[in-house]
Length: 96
Image 1 (cartoon, rainbow, N blue to C red):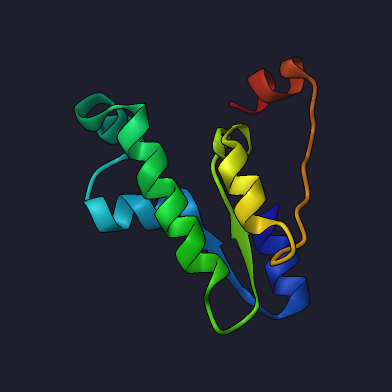
Image 2: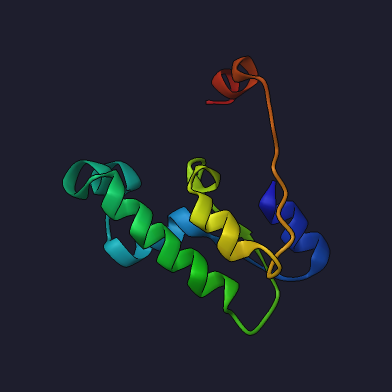
């Protein structure tokens, strides 16, 4: 969905999970297993801050647990328009 918005606006898409995987040279699952969620969330916050500080507008797509970390929402407040897409669990399961 984010790429459609980015394309419509003519801006870059920044997928936070992909940025983390690229920097770490391994999958999110591998990162969780090797380093744990606490470490991952710190890296996620750092990458989000980097994206929010970029000089050009962008559509920033964080992972599913991003909004559950209150400091992320606080950091984005006033610096970004946040959109939360809510779907029923059955729909999410079907999409996976």
